[in-house]
Amino acid sequence: FGYRQNIFSPTALPYDDEQEGLKDQITIHFSHVVAENTPKGIAAEKFAQLVEEKSDGHLLVQVYPNSMLYSDDNELDALLKNDVQMIAPTISKMTDMLPNWQVLDLPFLIENNEQLKDVLNGNVSQSLLQELETVHIKGLTFWSNGFKQIASTSPILEVEQFNGKRIRMMPSNILRKQFHLLQAEPIATPFGNVYRDLQNHLVDAQENTISNIYSKQFHTMENHITLSNHGILAYAVLMNEQFWNELDEKYQQIIIESLEEMQNWQFEQAQKFNEQNLQDLQSDPNVTIYELDEANKQQWKEKLHPIYEHYKNTINDQYLDDLLDELN
Ligand code: LMR
Image (tube, rainbow, N blue to C red; front, side):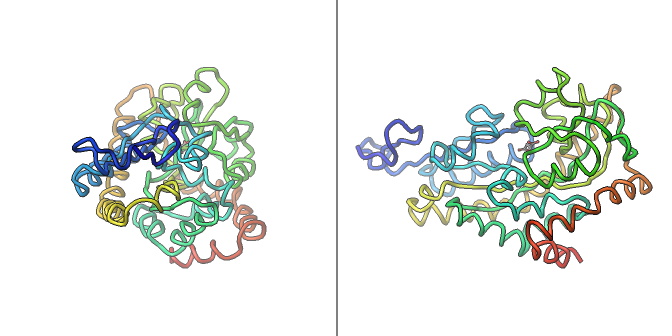
């Protein structure tokens, strides 16, 4: 047999296997950190189903949810080593490697799902995707998980209530800046550790989407939820570059077609999951949900105002203007 990778890699597969039925069968290992019943979880399964159908079973996608294979702090390294062929990290988690990507972490820029869809399909996002070539990763597309809210062990409505709060965040300098401006204490930890950190009282709050809060039961401890929609949560769907380059062109085309075919469906599912999970939370007597009213939102925005000049002066002076042009 020939092997695509060294035989110790889980992707080691016979690529000219003589056994009947296995000829030219390729498996893509797709690792992610959230639960199956989430916008990213069902998107990974949908992608697997489309790719298998379109390739008549020759191209298989094995999905590993819930950080069961790799967690936040090692999935990107595993992708670069081709120990896993696909991951879909939140954009925030790519910002250390690609600082310009922080533009999509800026608060209170994108206001609704339509704008979010336009931005993820827009020119700035395409430019960001192209930057992946500089780090030898194949960027395939963006998926959505809607808007981030604040989940906390005590109410956070007025901006002063952020003071001193230990807030779990994703590893992104602009998110660190965001929470420093709000006078909170940002703590970057992997998604898979958040539940335990809450149990051990290591954090007081976090920003996340309703689907991530509900699917991991964070609300059983962070039972005060402020609907702030202050930021977006979107995913970069990534493939190992060497694996992509070695794929037969017909399989590359199947992957592209499958992702294009499911793009709008994925955005709709993100909206549906977050709406459904919000209803689930609203029916939980132990959870208190607050709408961020205009007066409090203005207070948050005033505190956060320096973050935009900070991005333009220290990270990239063009992308923010381009994004604002796309939004207007
Ligand atoms: C988080 O770390 O909170 C999210 O990025 C998890 C995810 O992949 O949605």
